Structures are given as structure tokens and as C-alpha cells.
Amino acid sequence: MIKTMIEQAKKHPGLIPQFVFLTLGVTGATLYLLRLASGPHVTLWNKKKNPEPWNKLDPTYQYKFVAVNTDYKNLKKEGPDF
Image 1 (tube, one colour):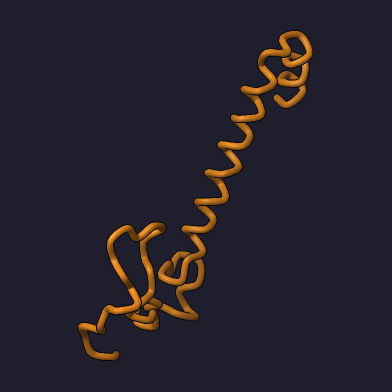
Image 2: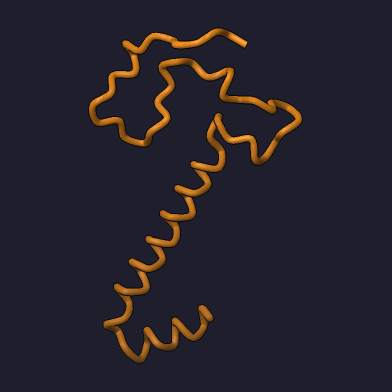
């Protein structure tokens, strides 16, 4: 498939930017999914080591990628320690 893409890029140079942006998009999406899958609140990879990782998180842990209006430093813990 890569050989076909290179041949098409040689025949039609206008496709080169499209291939570059396509590669950047796929790489970015893959890296973001790896980041999500390796978070501390995910039990997908190692269930025996830490079966309930959400109990060990700090109450100020920022779950969202971007927190617009929430100041996580001033949050108080709302539950017992288990």
C-alpha cells in the first residue's frame, strides 16, 4: 500500500500534502488513544496489580483533558477512604 502511495505521489505531486496530513492525523489519533488507554484510572491492562485504581486517585486529579471552569486544587474530598 505504501508503494502504491509513493507511485501515486510521483505521478500527482498535488497528493503529497494530503498524504502528509493523513499521516499526521492517524499518528495523532493513535498517540491520543494510547494516552487514554494508559491513564491511572484504566484497569484494562493490569487487573491483578490494581483492580480498583480510582480509589487511589487524589481528589484533585484532573480527569478531563481540558478543564475550563473547574479549579481542581480547591476541591474537597467528598467520601470515605477505602
